[in-house]
Structure formats: C-alpha cells, structure tokens
Image (cartoon, rainbow, N blue to C red):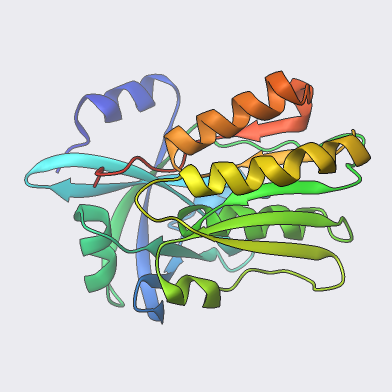
Length: 243
C-alpha cells in the first residue's frame, strides 16, 4: 500500500521512511497496549532525543492513514524501542490489538524535535492523558530532579494504573475524569495554574491533550497568565471521533 498524498508531501519535506518489526506485545490495561519493535535502522540514521515521535502508516479501508506515536525507551545501540497505544475505535487501535511478533509496519520520521527549556524551569506544569503518556514520561525523564504538577485526564478507571514515571517526592499528580468532554480538565487545571505561575513565574507548561482542550489551555497560559512562548509547549494529540 502506498502512502497517498500525505506520503508525497512528507517526502518533499525530506521525511525518512522505515519499516519496523514487532518483537513483543503487552496489554498494560484492557485499554492500553505496549508493543516492542526493531527500528529498521532508523535510530542509527536519525539519532534520538527526548519525546521523539514517528508517523505510523495504517490501512484504513484501503486508504493510507497516518498517526504519530512517541518512542518509549529507545535504545540506539540495539535499534529497538516500544510504542504505546491508548486503545479506542479505529484502524490504528485495531492494528495494535492484533499486532504480534513478526508483524511489520511502515513509518516516516519528519517533524519531530525537542529543545529542553533554558534556563531550566523551577517547575513543570503538565497536562496530558493516556494518548500523550509516553511524551509526558519522556519529558519527566529528560529533566530529572525538576518538580512537576501534573493534571492527567482519564477515561477509564484503569487509566489511574498506567505507568506514569513520577516521583512522589517531586511530582504532584491530579487525576481528572474526562466525562463527555475535556471541560473538567480545563476547569481543574485553570484553578491550579494561576497560583502555580504566580509562585513560580519561570515554570514551563507542557500541554498535550485533545486538540480542543489543548487549544483552550494554551490560550489561557499564554494570554491570561502571560507565560512567554518559549515557556509553553502545546500540541493536540488527538481529536474525538478520529481513527
């Protein structure tokens, strides 16, 4: 299967194509699955950095469909990593549920990048959910010793058991049930962000929720709390109803 017009655009943007091979699978919860893969030579060519992500290509009723996923515990020398999937309806989750050792999937690397905040922040203010959990964990690993306040949105009771790499001496976690929309996360996060930024104006906000929630919270911290652009990372990780 070709990659359609999106694949053509990524090629023009110097995207690099690889084929990954599944070596293992683990159901972390009934709604969250981890796959281990070999990288097809990717890391040797691209190098690696915190929160690095790749675009995977899926077959969606005969049409190419790409989604982005953050690498989990990449090993440059071994050429391996894991990928984690918050399972729902759609072709990406369907593939992840069935994936077994020996299965392969095409991937493109283009657009990924990360610059650690400088100077180092006094506190991280993190808003995420199961879809962005690998990126949140990679961020926490990248700035060890930095205190963090985390608002983590859940859709299932088992989401509280997901492997957040937090240190109880450094990281404060607030679990927020999603309900019908992301409104509760916006409400809860806004209630705590203002005080946090007032106490620590050099804090760094990392916002990786659904697109609508991310947009709302990013506007709040930039416009109302006046956090400068270089102190805010905001990227919508999913859209309700998208496969």
